[in-house]
Length: 483
Ligand code: ADP
Ligand code: GLC
Image (tube, rainbow, N blue to C red; front, side, top):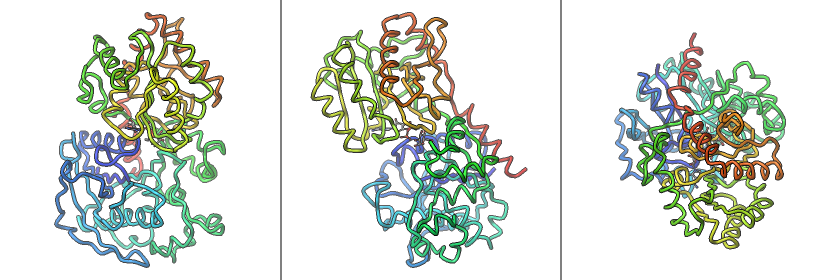
């Protein structure tokens, strides 16, 4: 099939979270299965052109797009996705919109930046004379494409057979703008096609628009697919999702074990496998040294790698960590960036317990791999988690995840039962300080029982969330759309 994957981020070119990994991993899987898959993304100024040499595409060296109020010019460029056979990543090169300090921000023209992305993808397909069977869209940034197909591009036979599938990676980000945005996007005369309740209230919502006009919807775990149909998790979109429940599928993300596997990971010093774990404590020792901690080898090391936002549940920690750190022989290393209050808190914690706590504020892929390999336990107490990749990476690295039973965390981590020796991690139910505290103490208890811990690690490392397992579910959906 011809599959057009559109995303605002793609690893390793530009990444702020799991979306980037998922699009790259799914793309590679689809390519390896013989599909004509092509990825489209913005060519951000932050993408290193030395590292990723983008060549010009003759069919579209300079395209002028009259968006509505303003004209924009973009060029289409192309590179090969690293670690793929020859999977093309097409970059929409529009410096005026995409050469900014951050990938996303509260830029006044955010709606124009991503509105243009949607149109530029269609314009590029036209110039390439490439007729996708499926546009596989991701998150709010790509939400307008189905509507553009049904309106401004309805005349073009090239797209007559194209179906659209929108994957919701995170319903917390919707792309909501004042209705003025429509004039900037050439969509004013289609105002009645937008959700009318929203329109009357003075705004348009890109994600909701995508949810209404896509042929099919997916989200990144089965549990999240159910959760977002409720007011607790739907963030105002639950009613639309209930209406579209018959065209909504939950598919847990795959993991690209080419990138995340302690046996071959080029970013860690000591490789290891389930059969020979001797490398793991060596990685741990190096991590402890790198963070200048003073804990002994027997002390369990907790780790976390995360965007520091309300979603991730870190506000449960201030009532727990100082107590644990005072009472227990343990260490903690955190890698993350995001909201200032969390960054400040972890800095405070580091200052208070300098021999036991390490924090690295910022984004650092190499360190993310080193923490997965060197930590013993991985903290993910998320308030909500559509899928979550880090708990799956942790399992593969023999690092026991401590998670809340929500979204993809519920679907991928099985509570460990020391009596039966079954299970892969530690799972608490309600978003509640005492519940997390209890689970962390359980983890410390099991840690003391070396046989039980070894069993837990083996169980986790044996899990398989590869794209080989998860990818066919997308292929079935794609072909189902054409059946
Ligand atoms: P989300 O997409 O909500 O951030 P996921 O668990 O799906 O959560 O994916 C997060 C991805 O981003 C993982 O690959 C993780 O290693 C990476 N990541 C998050 N924060 C950082 C950071 N500060 N430095 C390096 N990698 C990070
Ligand atoms: C989102 C979610 C995360 C998910 C990722 C990739 O950012 O927060 O849970 O794993 O997308 O689908």
